[in-house]
Length: 294
Image 1 (cartoon, rainbow, N blue to C red):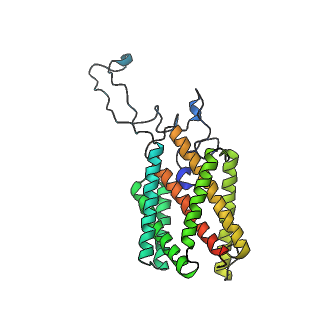
Image 2: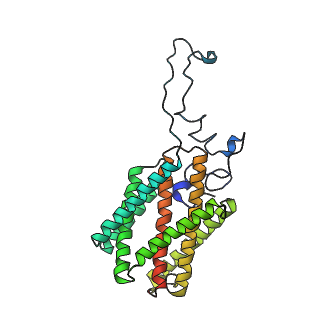
Image 3: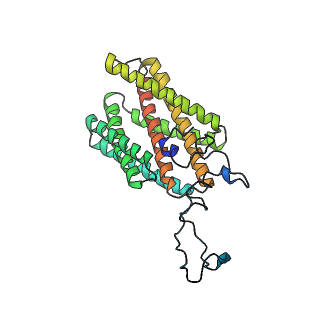
């Protein structure tokens, strides 16, 4: 089973055992436990950038007239600093875009257009073989425009102060989940991953059914986004986002442990940004519902 996060699901962040992320901790003498060994293109045996033996006389395999092999520097493994810096850049771009939309009082029509562009850019990056920093930052900018316009509209017409409450709520969820993960209160394993995937599929399916009823039946559809039932689904959405954070933390932790190349830190930043955007949107809707505004 692949990760629900499209950023990680198509990378070498999964093993044949079906566990999303890098799976089990590395075992001594067991290269199969490391997703960056064996078939992994970055492993020593299959990495085209791995340094080769520069001695033309080594083991008698090369003749005197044979040119010495060319060397290409090996990609430095990513570190936590790499992940933090790139996540900061990506989230910073979201914040800048949101600020611009808020100050310019961007219309919701343009905001929806920005959201569609961000969705397309996100899908393109998800299916690319390598991370593209320009594409990721462009996604963050357009996502920021949408969030800024939506937050401004909610602040003006629905509940003043709701966006700030949603931001604080998102930060609280992140900190609590990080502490729970680091203290191993939350343990990410195969069973945990399956539960999150199934829950996410069910949540999205119900939202799609509700949207269809809204389009063809009018009103609020099945009521999943308003009233008491809407509050329940809002809480479920926030909790689901928190579980996604745990998967992201695991993937980052294992990527560093297994020596993932530095460029993968952009994918980590991309995945974390998408999860935080999810939590913020669900939190904003939840604050709106708890204030008595549908």
